[in-house]
Image 1 (cartoon, one colour):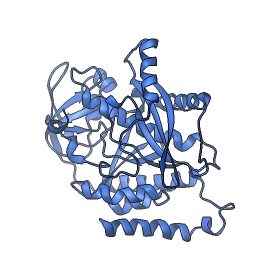
Image 2 (image 1 turned 180 degrees about the horizontal axis):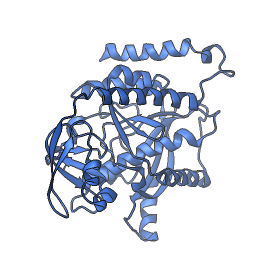
Image 3 (image 1 turned 45 degrees about the vertical axis):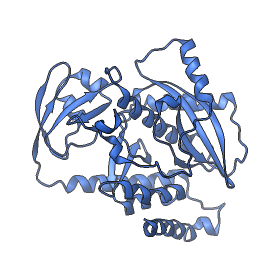
Image 4 (image 1 turned 180 degrees about the vertical axis):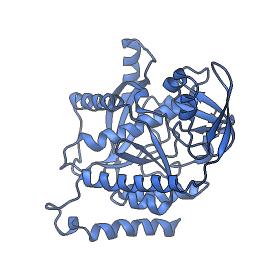
Length: 340
């Protein structure tokens, strides 16, 4: 792992010293749009490559178990997703299904292709035991917050996304940790927090699917070559992955790394408030922990009860700090047996 970390670091330094940014920081720094285009070109090319490598289409049998009745489906291996299965059954399942459960033991993204015969359950927020759907929702909220933060500040203010701890609904808030080099003592106003909250709702209204793509470590390093923190995390994530691959997620043009799973669409986000930004003291880096609280669409709560949640979410979330990597990626925790 140490050797791979050095390789990733070398790629970052090499791209930095060979860039015009090093020669003339003010005149030709890569813009956010340039970085996004570069990342998405790589993501799209890999997605197409994997699709073309499928070869001859094989059929798989998917046994759906759940409301309103059990059904057997014949789907396409490595192509059909739980969302496609829902489309073949009932519109109600298409609208409400946020997460899938495969063979009663593995939680599965709605837009992740199925790879074998299986038993399929489609999970939603009104389930009798919604704990795993809630965790996936909390994780997706953090992912969406990263997207919002990437675009909320002016071009001259550099925002470096670091990571977010594994979701813990009991903590009272979802989180994203970022570094803002040019703002050593920033304290956002109430209006600024409201703007961030509004941006989360605006993102939700775009009805974007949450795409998942598994890539090798080398490509992941290439995609995040402009983010030194992601480069530091990728080798550890690869080490803890069963297939040594890195899982990427994308909404719109925003790409991030996460162990997943996530809910299938940003439109599941309902009421949402970005409640606080806490400065985290670590060396000389300007770490900030952004926190928020949210309810899935269709889950109603009166104003007083929601204000209690908002107040709780203002307190510093004591989840894993950004410089603590031991809990970054644990794919074995995605089984139902380990997480229920």
